[in-house]
Length: 355
Image (cartoon, rainbow, N blue to C red):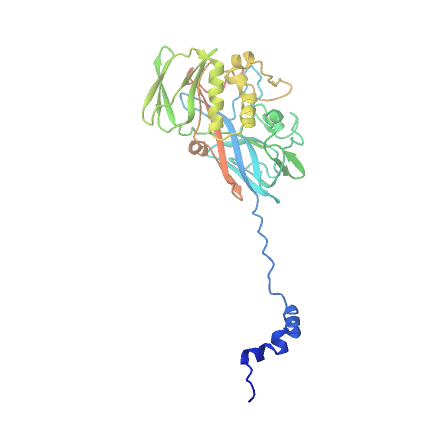
């Protein structure tokens, strides 16, 4: 009788099971790959933000001049308003910049645009924001635009713009030239709505009533003294006594308000270079600051120094009521630090003709 061989043993003895299948292995090895290369992560487009500072002269009659005081005896370098740009990310970045005053007329701007200003409006088209700081290619002389187009007793601010360049902003390129910032100056023909009102109480004392909150604290400067005042709640009032504090404290307080409004340290320093000798003259001298001053031959505006004034920084919303800024494409953020210099000496115009 023949002995039966178990089926499983018989199957294992078959070559293709016991020793493997060479042709099968070759077929697996030669099978095409089905893996897909990873999709590269797209690089986001560059973004930017804009920082602006400027100054308004006003008085108790709410007569306001936006960067447009007229000549007075002392020549002082000023530059306002100016726009600094800060970019992030890689790739080309070109923007259109438009400025429109709430009322009034553009007086001068720099760099010049071919079409010039149109009444209360001004536009720079195709401004490239390039990473890294730079200085202005050149600034105008008194004998060329916009300086030679100014009428009346105005000086020319564009001639002084090199004094407010900063090392931390990014470079602007327009029509083959390079610039640290953009500049415009206009005169308002109607007073804006101020966020606070001031009423005289006699004996050099005043009552301030807050309608909308300013940025930071209030500073009163009178002669060689200053006082720092916390702004009360909206609808409340505070009395301004005759200042007895140091001018340096007032200057530092205003600088902190500018920083609170969004300016960089370098931009705050640029504002102080432009304004400390006018707003806080004794403080600037005692601190040993090096101030670049204008001369009648060099141009610039000629302004009276502070005798008795209230200084404060507008909120972002109140700054937007003075002039509208439009950018295409839009920036991530716009910081506007507009300082009000409210003359407390009288209700006369804030500028003083030299006669």
